Each structure stands twice: as C-alpha cells, then as structure tokens.
Length: 485
Image (cartoon, rainbow, N blue to C red; front, side, top):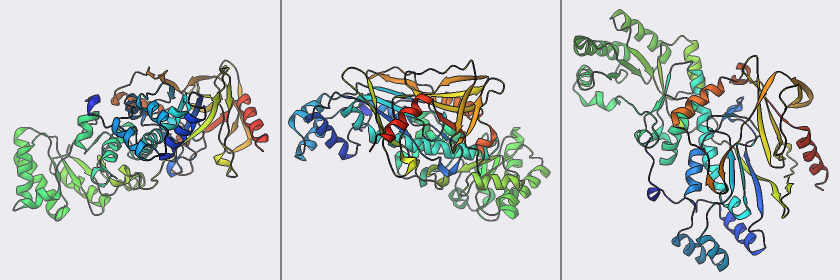
C-alpha cells in the first residue's frame, strides 16, 4: 500500500464547522481551555433499516489527527474575521492534539446507541475535531455497510465497485472504493484507490471500444489479441444474443483457443439480465466455453442482485456503481458527536446527558466501555453491553439483559465470553494503534459479520440485536433524567 508523504497531505484542520472555532475561543477566554471532556460518536438507526452497520473511516481519522495544525494562512484568515482574541490565535499557532481516542476497529459490525469512537481531550481539542471525525466515520461506515449488504446478496460471487463517475466528488470516489472493499467488494474500477490504498483495480472495455471498430467481431478479436489473459467482452452494444455472444465466441475460438487460454468472460450491461445471462450461458457452454464467466452491471443493488439470483440468473460477477458509491437508498449514515462527561479538577468524571422530547435523541452518559458477548457453544454474537469505564464484566456466570425495543422483555445470557470492542488509538496525543493492512480489515470484517445470526443479517425485518446498559450505567442515566429539570 502506498501512503502519501506527510508534506503531500492537504491540511484539513480548517475543515470544521465555524462554531467549533467560536466555541474554542469562548472556552479559552472563560477558563475551560484545559478542562477534559468526553465525547461519543454513535448513530441512532441502521441505514436501510438493516440489522447492523459496518464501522469504517478510522484510518483517515488517524491521518487527520497526526497532521492537525494551523498554518500561518489559517491564523491570518481567522484574525481577519475579527472574532477571535489574539491570545486564542497565539494558542492555535502551536496547536496539536494531546488527548485520547478509543475506537472500534474498522470492519466491526456496530449497532445503534453504542460508541464507535470515544474522544477524551481538552475541551477545545475535542470540539475542533468534531466535523472531520463525523465526516470520515459517517461516510465510510455508510459505504462499507451498503457494500456488505450487496456482497451478502451476491452469495459468494465476485462484486466489484464501479461507481467513480457517479460519486459525489473525487474524495467520495477514492475513499468510497476503500470503504466498499472493507465491506467485502473484491475490487474497484477506481485506479487511484489501488495506487493509494491497495484496493485491487480492474476493468475491461466500454461500448466506445466496440463502436470504434468497423465491426463488433473486429473489436472483440482485437481486444483478445491485446489482452489474451484478461479478455472480458462487452456484448450488448448492438444485439446481445444475435451478434454479441456469437461474435465473442468466434473471437475466443480464433484467438484464445489456439493459445490454450480458457479464462475469459463476457459482460451484460442492459436488457433483461436474468434471461440474457441464461441464454448466453447456454450458448457459451454449447460452444465449449464452460469456463467463460458472465458478469453483469447496470444500476444494481442488493435487492436487484437478490432477485436476479432468485430468477436463476447465470452470473458469476457483479459490477455495482451508483447505488453503492452513493448509498443511493440511504444517503446519510447519521452518526452524531455528543458530550457525555467532563473531568473535574480532582480527576473525578462527571457524566453529562442530552435530554430531548424525542426519546431516541436522549444520550447515554458517561465514559463507557462496550462489550460484545459471544456464545461459547456457537461462537455467535449474543448481545452488546455498555458499562461505565470502571466496570468489568464477569463472564463466568449468568447475566440478565433487556430487549432494546421492549425493556420488559428479559434475556439471560450464559456460557459466554465478553470482549471489549473499543481499543486505544491515541493516548496523550501519541498514536498507539497498529494500523492493519486493508486486506486484514476486509478479512476481519468478513469474520465478524460471520459471528452474527442470520436473523440479524436479514434485509427485511431483521431481528433486533440486544444492546443493553449495565445496571450501574442505567441507574446513572435515570438519575440524570430525573434531575434534568
């Protein structure tokens, strides 16, 4: 994997909401500059009403934190706004992040209400990183979640991300391909994502290639001669079954067969994909090209892929574009960044809560741990359990938890192993997290999704996974609610 040199990185420090700077100035002038605060990043609803989401974006958050600084130009701009004290601007000249960050590793299945990232830092530092933290976690988690749904719908067939030209901007295309790979895609059409992040890039031809030649057959033959070991032919430029597939077979016979090459493919990009793939498969097999793979594209998503396979479509590979890279069916992840505690001068932690008439917007206070319980008999994830930071879970006995949607329903968890999900990333401003390779993240994601029950992985009406609070944390929350008046 190629990493950009530090000096080549764009300084994203000013990619923040303006109120983060005005609040920072206010904290500075009113004696809160050094007060330690705790913020949680979490979401309230799974995209597409699914059973779970996939955490992603930590790599870019790490890069951002390591490069966090205000340039002379930044300071000059802020001075020109005539809102900030000179003392605050002087403070910003030497600004660096000195706090702690904890996060769930990328590729982890996550659920509503539980922290994906926890920031413990002086108030100004914690406030200034809010926008970029949400931006990277929200975007990549959204795309990784959508990609995982699509990959699961494909049932083991190859899925490639084809969406660069429909992405909402260059960064969305590049980083989106990375997130899609974490979610399970096998590769991308986006070359620069391969160059920077190691997402395998590939591609074949556009309709323009076929139209460029005097005949469809000549276009196919020339392509096979140019790329004999990677010949996938787009067969729907004119007429898929009358000319496209027959001309592809002819080119394969005349160019590849004499070379002893049996690896090849055709791509369908329009029409009734299920019917065309069935007929094409029959034609290819009858011509002795049983090894020729059939790929399909054309505005696919998890539901269309599922329907195609239910119709017995003969497709080996799916290229998914706009509906993946834009997460078209659910364009916002909805993660939020909320203050959950402050640290007093004596080191004690004071929990904070946000109260709302909208019940789902009431926060879970305090500096917390997140445990995931795995059944020792099945290896499957049973529930997630939020505790106060100083609690430990005894997984040697039984534990009673509540249904997340109906607190009168109880479930007894037994014979389980508890695993902490949040891991240290920065401590005292120093990176302590060993960043895994992208391929390791994808493998980890696949393994962790495999620990979920099929009922949680359903697209329609998935089972509600248990996410409960410890008795201590629940009581703290209740006390804060009762005293919020």
